[in-house]
Image (cartoon, rainbow, N blue to C red):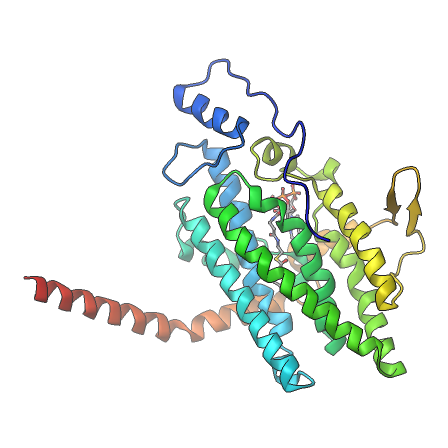
Length: 332
Ligand code: BYC
């Protein structure tokens, strides 16, 4: 249901080849031919900067995304749910690592990226600044947040930067399991007591609009989209992905038996898509700018985890140094 066509007609504009240096021409030709740019290849500084920004923000989202769900590991309702949740949260940590590694191939160190996150300079996904109030929220994060993440990330498997596109293939496979486990957990609750059903509906009401905002501002207000699309970094626009997500999710909500909290949500025969209501963009920007309900708490938890783990990093470095010295002595 989240698969998307691999070819998008007219995706690449013909390269404007006037006054290009040989290396620029080679880069443009590779983009035009839908090839991949690799770390050792020449690339325009703005392309490199855009990728570092997007990939590092993506990596930060993965590791901050561990926090709202991580809070529920000790409170999961059964051993089975606990084991699934531990595996999921661990996967998110792994996604962060693939992505930091992909960004490092562009010449920015992991320390620089982590500093930018911890100092509040770098962004991460708005969605992780909202609280997880009860167990149904964990299911809804899997179903809707991971569902939105997959919709956004499948086109990134075809991103023009090789290391990012390859990382995304594995990330998407794992996200697909995350989405299903969330949906299945909610299905079980919807077959339960009246109270459980209400918990699910309440969680859906709280998360629905935030998930629609996750795809980023409308195309007309998205400063980076046009250039990122030309470079083959983004393949499908924020608005198109949002629409695809709504269209895929409405039938799932029906099967689940929940109502999506939007009186304007209805099938448009002419467009062959669902129409939906207005997103509160002021609330979105307020959250992105650091003033959402959990921004301060999330950042403080991240900084504390990083500081508490300092001794592990130092011990690992000391061990690696000792091993290297031993290998050097043996070779001498
Ligand atoms: N939250 O010109 P635009 C996950 C910012 S991980 C915060 O459209 P772009 C998961 C944007 O950064 C989910 N900020 O930008 C993990 C830009 O600000 P700057 C993360 C947002 O880059 C664990 C400004 O708004 N996924 O799902 O072309 C558990 C203008 O936007 C947001 C990714 O990161 C937002 N929602 O498009 C479960 C995917 N949206 O940088 C799940 C990779 C926009 O100028 N990233 N902004 O200061 C992307 O695909 C793109 O970067 C975006 C934004 C679609 C997010």
